[in-house]
Length: 127
Image 1 (cartoon, rainbow, N blue to C red):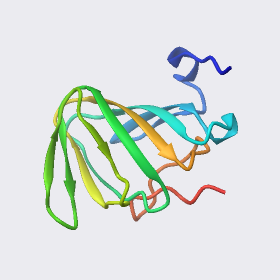
Image 2: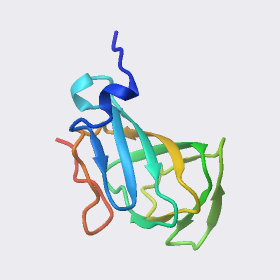
Image 3: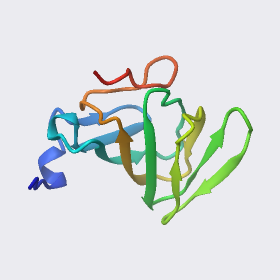
Image 4: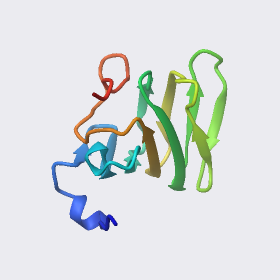
């Protein structure tokens, strides 16, 4: 059984804080559960281009408001608490925080913990 608390992750090497988001990585590839789980804050007033071409991501909003815009179709979806989206087609998108948004994110394959978006908006392929 794996037992962790968010307080243990905050301020550690698995608390990745960027200009646009802060991702606290709770479960990682090293935990051998087949996915990773991140407690992420999307910062208010930010816009981030993201393309998880090597991962499938499921995102569940628990706080705040924003939007996701799919780049290929220009479809825009409002994000608010209780909203779930899954990027099962590796959709390239813009993620915008109207207020700070707290999101629970699941990645498959699992992330190693130190990933940040590259120039394409992607994480590198997990090894």
